[in-house]
Length: 314
Image (cartoon, rainbow, N blue to C red; front, top):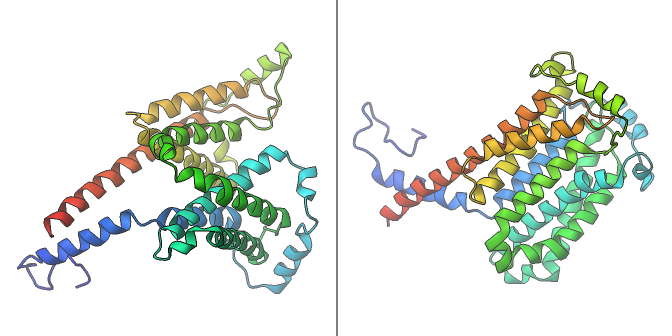
């Protein structure tokens, strides 16, 4: 009875043609809904912040997380590379701000596209980041970090003031997919190669080459399940974004390019002190890129089918 493609009867007869047309029209409209990318990116950021989702209502745990939290501004920079924080904290929230800005500007009130809209978007994105840090109080094993909210605020400001106007230009619409592919590829390479502690001693390089993990998924067998899933999910998500970008830019088989990129990055890790080269990572990157390309193709086919049915119904 809840299916809009059929009338409640034993044989589904007569066929509800008008119901199918209405459902296809709604699906076609939702496929181009400007709020979708922002919601999806916000959900991904929430998943990253609250993983492994071990929610608790125990006040002693919340108090312990509060005490373990970092409340001194900019203290993170003394423990981590600034470039790592830029990639992991500033860039994603800049993207969220751009997606939110575009969605807000496409609304019925054109005044929202001005400076008032920019301030509103910055406030919403910053509050979302601050809310995620506050939510960590109720997650076992997580603790809030004030720097995450501060870096998110910087990213949101860059997004609304710099990247959003560029994203709306004609040049961006024409060359956007190719530039996005280069950007996502560079970010993926950075994540795989940071902290760039290159080796120059031939003997140490030879020792690193002997430690290459050739058996797929071998390291995951002995790792904590939550950590293993988080690591694999991160690689697949970033790689899928690259795959979708490559497919949007016109690359026919992005999976092969992803596999080549993954193999090249793992080969470079032989020259680094802090990484263990692994076939698993190369395969995960290739699989993620392929899945991203296939997902974009599936969305395009679905849009085309929905559009044809919607046009036929008008």
